[in-house]
Length: 155
Image (cartoon, rainbow, N blue to C red):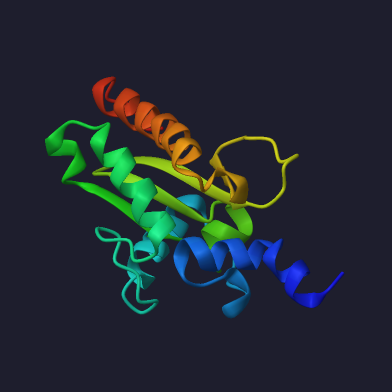
Protein backbone atom coordinates (compact mmCIF):
# COMPACT_ATOMS: atom_id res chain seq x y z
CA UNK A 1 0.00 0.00 0.00
CA UNK A 2 1.37 3.43 -0.90
CA UNK A 3 2.12 5.70 2.06
CA UNK A 4 -0.35 8.38 0.86
CA UNK A 5 -3.09 5.75 0.45
CA UNK A 6 -2.45 4.41 3.97
CA UNK A 7 -2.36 7.93 5.43
CA UNK A 8 -5.72 8.80 3.81
CA UNK A 9 -7.29 5.81 5.57
CA UNK A 10 -5.73 6.45 8.97
CA UNK A 11 -7.20 7.83 12.17
CA UNK A 12 -4.75 10.77 12.33
CA UNK A 13 -5.80 11.85 8.83
CA UNK A 14 -9.48 11.88 9.87
CA UNK A 15 -8.68 13.71 13.11
CA UNK A 16 -6.82 16.40 11.12
CA UNK A 17 -9.72 16.77 8.69
CA UNK A 18 -12.17 17.18 11.55
CA UNK A 19 -10.20 19.14 14.17
CA UNK A 20 -7.17 20.43 12.25
CA UNK A 21 -4.78 18.39 14.43
CA UNK A 22 -4.30 14.79 15.53
CA UNK A 23 -3.58 13.03 18.80
CA UNK A 24 -0.14 11.97 17.56
CA UNK A 25 0.98 15.62 17.66
CA UNK A 26 0.82 15.74 21.46
CA UNK A 27 2.80 13.97 24.21
CA UNK A 28 1.06 11.22 26.15
CA UNK A 29 -0.82 12.92 29.00
CA UNK A 30 -0.92 11.64 32.55
CA UNK A 31 -4.08 9.89 33.66
CA UNK A 32 -6.87 12.12 34.97
CA UNK A 33 -10.35 11.23 36.20
CA UNK A 34 -13.19 11.81 33.77
CA UNK A 35 -14.24 15.09 35.39
CA UNK A 36 -10.69 16.44 35.57
CA UNK A 37 -10.24 15.39 31.94
CA UNK A 38 -13.19 17.56 30.89
CA UNK A 39 -11.74 20.53 32.78
CA UNK A 40 -8.35 20.04 31.10
CA UNK A 41 -9.92 19.91 27.64
CA UNK A 42 -11.73 23.19 28.25
CA UNK A 43 -8.49 24.83 29.41
CA UNK A 44 -6.36 23.79 26.39
CA UNK A 45 -8.63 24.97 23.57
CA UNK A 46 -6.98 28.37 23.03
CA UNK A 47 -3.42 27.04 23.11
CA UNK A 48 -4.41 24.49 20.45
CA UNK A 49 -5.97 27.18 18.29
CA UNK A 50 -9.47 25.76 18.61
CA UNK A 51 -12.55 27.92 19.25
CA UNK A 52 -15.36 25.73 20.68
CA UNK A 53 -18.01 28.26 19.63
CA UNK A 54 -16.71 28.57 16.06
CA UNK A 55 -15.20 25.31 14.70
CA UNK A 56 -12.63 26.06 12.02
CA UNK A 57 -12.63 23.03 9.72
CA UNK A 58 -15.28 22.50 7.08
CA UNK A 59 -16.49 19.17 8.45
CA UNK A 60 -16.61 20.21 12.11
CA UNK A 61 -18.41 23.42 11.16
CA UNK A 62 -21.03 21.49 9.16
CA UNK A 63 -21.68 19.10 12.06
CA UNK A 64 -21.76 21.93 14.62
CA UNK A 65 -24.17 24.01 12.51
CA UNK A 66 -26.47 21.03 11.87
CA UNK A 67 -26.66 20.19 15.57
CA UNK A 68 -27.40 23.85 16.32
CA UNK A 69 -30.39 23.88 13.95
CA UNK A 70 -31.92 20.99 15.92
CA UNK A 71 -31.75 22.77 19.28
CA UNK A 72 -33.89 25.58 20.70
CA UNK A 73 -32.29 28.95 19.82
CA UNK A 74 -31.32 29.60 23.45
CA UNK A 75 -29.59 26.20 23.59
CA UNK A 76 -27.98 26.60 20.17
CA UNK A 77 -26.35 29.85 21.30
CA UNK A 78 -24.70 27.91 24.15
CA UNK A 79 -23.53 25.00 21.93
CA UNK A 80 -19.79 24.33 22.01
CA UNK A 81 -17.61 21.71 20.28
CA UNK A 82 -14.42 20.87 22.17
CA UNK A 83 -11.34 19.14 20.77
CA UNK A 84 -9.97 16.52 23.18
CA UNK A 85 -7.32 14.97 20.92
CA UNK A 86 -4.18 14.00 22.80
CA UNK A 87 -5.70 14.73 26.23
CA UNK A 88 -6.55 12.32 29.04
CA UNK A 89 -10.17 12.38 27.83
CA UNK A 90 -8.99 11.00 24.49
CA UNK A 91 -6.27 8.62 25.64
CA UNK A 92 -7.91 7.14 28.76
CA UNK A 93 -11.65 7.75 28.36
CA UNK A 94 -12.07 7.22 24.61
CA UNK A 95 -13.50 10.57 23.48
CA UNK A 96 -11.87 12.67 20.75
CA UNK A 97 -14.10 15.60 21.57
CA UNK A 98 -17.46 16.57 22.95
CA UNK A 99 -20.38 18.84 22.25
CA UNK A 100 -21.75 20.76 25.21
CA UNK A 101 -24.73 22.92 26.01
CA UNK A 102 -24.06 24.39 29.45
CA UNK A 103 -23.63 21.27 31.68
CA UNK A 104 -25.01 18.79 29.13
CA UNK A 105 -22.37 16.86 27.20
CA UNK A 106 -22.29 14.35 24.32
CA UNK A 107 -18.97 12.62 23.70
CA UNK A 108 -17.68 12.29 20.13
CA UNK A 109 -15.45 9.49 18.83
CA UNK A 110 -13.84 9.99 15.42
CA UNK A 111 -12.91 6.77 13.63
CA UNK A 112 -12.08 5.29 10.25
CA UNK A 113 -13.04 1.81 11.45
CA UNK A 114 -16.33 0.49 10.10
CA UNK A 115 -16.54 -2.21 12.78
CA UNK A 116 -16.28 0.13 15.77
CA UNK A 117 -19.23 -0.25 18.14
CA UNK A 118 -20.82 2.73 19.85
CA UNK A 119 -20.47 2.66 23.59
CA UNK A 120 -20.37 5.90 25.55
CA UNK A 121 -19.63 8.20 22.59
CA UNK A 122 -21.41 9.05 19.37
CA UNK A 123 -19.27 7.61 16.59
CA UNK A 124 -18.45 9.84 13.63
CA UNK A 125 -16.81 7.81 10.89
CA UNK A 126 -14.80 9.16 8.00
CA UNK A 127 -17.55 7.74 5.77
CA UNK A 128 -20.09 10.00 7.57
CA UNK A 129 -18.69 13.20 6.08
CA UNK A 130 -21.37 13.45 3.36
CA UNK A 131 -24.14 15.97 4.03
CA UNK A 132 -26.74 13.22 4.47
CA UNK A 133 -24.64 11.29 7.00
CA UNK A 134 -23.61 14.46 8.85
CA UNK A 135 -27.32 15.15 9.26
CA UNK A 136 -27.90 11.71 10.77
CA UNK A 137 -25.01 12.07 13.23
CA UNK A 138 -26.13 15.62 14.10
CA UNK A 139 -29.65 14.33 14.74
CA UNK A 140 -28.30 11.69 17.12
CA UNK A 141 -26.23 14.28 19.01
CA UNK A 142 -29.09 16.81 19.16
CA UNK A 143 -31.49 14.13 20.38
CA UNK A 144 -29.13 13.24 23.23
CA UNK A 145 -28.58 16.90 24.14
CA UNK A 146 -32.29 17.75 23.95
CA UNK A 147 -33.19 14.70 26.05
CA UNK A 148 -30.62 15.65 28.65
CA UNK A 149 -31.60 19.32 28.76
CA UNK A 150 -35.35 18.78 28.94
CA UNK A 151 -35.24 15.81 31.30
CA UNK A 152 -32.72 17.72 33.42
CA UNK A 153 -30.20 14.93 33.55
CA UNK A 154 -26.63 14.59 32.39
CA UNK A 155 -25.89 12.50 29.29
